[in-house]
Image (cartoon, rainbow, N blue to C red):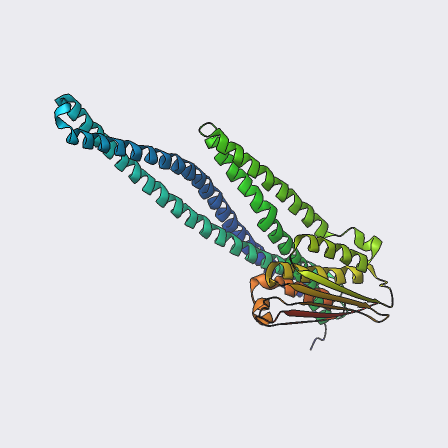
Length: 375
């Protein structure tokens, strides 16, 4: 019996598996692209329908006023019948009938446009759901494919240990990409989409209603400024430039100062610094966990107070982060696709042989405790 790994056989199996996964990835990509194109098509039609609907609603209002005027004219004729000629009476009734017919037709057109708008919104929602699902599947397939194409060709002393570590690192990288993608999609990308929609809308109303167009342009400028601010924040979050120069404590202080300017909750920060952090990687890992913890607090906690304590000792760095917010189920959150924030924190800490514990219950706030070896 052989007690070694036949690398040629293993490579052949891996290549065959990788080819099959690559084919599946292409099919998922095609589904994703089709969903994206469908969404763009529906969105463009939705813009046109919405603009046309606005014009039709305005015409319905005008026709409604005309019909009321016609009915008032007929009422006046009926009250003073002897004072009007037969021609006047016929013209009044003819005017009223035309106004009624035109109003009926416009209301029918308004209903059809409104129904189409609602249908397009449903189709856009479905296309977006397919797109998000296919992107998630594509990410998972990419993890498996990258792992197959890289790790088995390395010289491995401990196959099981290297396999687990390689997969964890790749998953952490892919999850980080997904987080960045989600931040861009939910922030600047969505804002820029709204800018395009608003610009389209302004171009359609600028001649008919200059004053309203001017107000819309002012709102558009405010939106663009907010988008620029979000982009700068994402760039800073990717790599805080002060971390290597100022160290963990000073960088966290800057993070807290920024949060206190923008958030309603109070932050109590306690530092016990009996040693220094010697490794840049440890600095980065500790900061990323604290940053992700604050991100979760901002997005989900609805708290009034936050407590952060950092203790730096010769052997370990300890972090304690607590809030008095609404809390959540840690188990359920980790099982969901949206629970990658907690998953990433655990992955980061485990890579540097650390320990993290997250306790939370509905209505009882959240407590995060982390210990990282200072070596």
